[in-house]
Image 1 (spheres, rainbow, N blue to C red):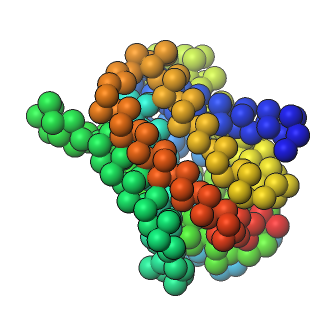
Image 2 (cartoon, rainbow, N blue to C red):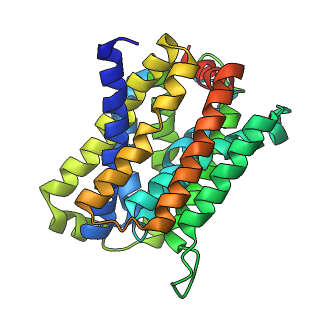
Length: 298
């Protein structure tokens, strides 16, 4: 990998990590309703990517469902979770999406799991459970992290369903993610939240900048750059580099939002990340993740 492309990969991971911190500040610090935040993000994505909507990918229902799960559905749960969870713990629990994808591929696509990947899956789940479990609290399992776990599952389900959609290019996929997410989220925020515009107005320009960062830089620029790198380099080179994302998030969480990183978090994070590394290296050899992405990026 060239220094330029490694720098791009690092910037992608830094952007994703920064987005976790920004999301925490928006829904917790600015007290913006999480569903409203997700709604504004995907309305912007839908408007910017309108020129790439056509032709309609087939089957339409699957594209709409995958678009909502991959976009608004998953991120709505993530924003609900990050309101009470720390960015550091959210970053680690989000990594459970990869073993979930492997397990769903077995159930839905008939894939087989090699024993090494099985060990990686077990380590990741054990590490994630340690991060989520805090016996000193009245409710040992963090409610916010349950939403984060739900977000990871939704994203995993969408990734597996995505394998059955062919011929969708990156910006076209983003266009359908935006459209399929914006409409349901408008209904959800109107039904379950109140005072959205008042709180957004009170937050002012920092909220505007945050939502533009989320929609344009994260959804469009970073994801498109990542997809291009996936197509350019083998999966066994790209996949391990993704470990930079949770590591950077943990560091930013400690520095910016004052996350507590004790021995329990350290052990859980180490186990989870070791498990992810085992899974990604195994996935890279079989080409599973590469095939999942390439199906809709060509």
